[in-house]
Image 1: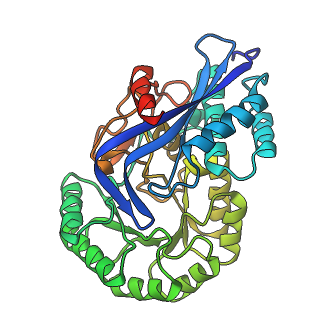
Image 2 (image 1 turned 90 degrees about the vertical axis):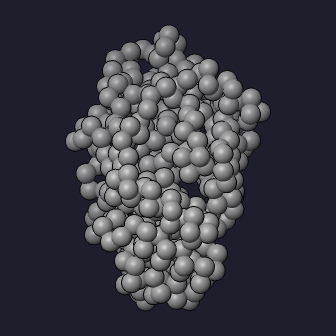
Image 3 (image 1 turned 30 degrees about the vertical axis):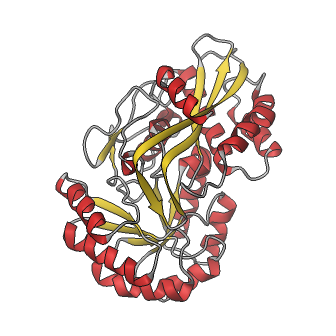
Length: 376
């Protein structure tokens, strides 16, 4: 290990990638992916850690690119500068003490610190997490945004024909329209493919119950965040009144919020995102869920290959997760453009776990220069 290496700079690089078509969820739509590349540099030439701060969700981001960049430059950079590459815990505590909220920014700091430490040790990030048990992990197909039922079912049928074993669709318009969407997709993919339904905070509890009861004959694997993220009691009410498992996502940004959802019996499953919880936070939440007898589903469907590689390492080192994982790609917007040189999604239904030091991927600074111009 480069035990004497010190952090000398922290950079924030805005990224913008435009797709060929719109991607719509209940909270809004977009055809542009916006994020910030976090780069931690050291006094050892070539030794650095990187991560993606995702400005999510699309159409209604919880953290905007401008505020992410400001937080990194004003608070994160001074907090980390001068620390050794092995002082991950100290670095995390410093950032937590300076930044209120900002889970997406903090999560990326945690990932970049893991990447840096693992590179200094010459091992993959999965090794820091306890070691991996797989060279590739199963994933769902590219998430299908809100659209006409015929369009959604056509896309879903194509994914199923390609060998994808789990398909996720977005709903969140009207009850009748969403019923039509779910039924059309199930008819298109048949009974042998898992179907996951995500409403992104859209419904009131009574309406969510009505919707879920109407689509239970299609046997969805779970319903994700059917009511407002601020209404955990409403989530618990929905859970008590339907037979389909209920999963939180937007309601849980921190381990403390995860514990509240568990205590209120608001869910059967919980979405865990390395992009929102960091590697350390994700591990803590999964352990709490496991102790409570609940399930964890991993992944963020709207991220680039850098963030996806971090989630792949976590998936490979965490056998208790419910697969397939929801580790993302930009294909929902009709593009495979990325900021890394490696191709992680080489086979439908799987993502490769990089085996090089750190996250095991290489940022393409030439591509990033073009994407940065679009984000300026």
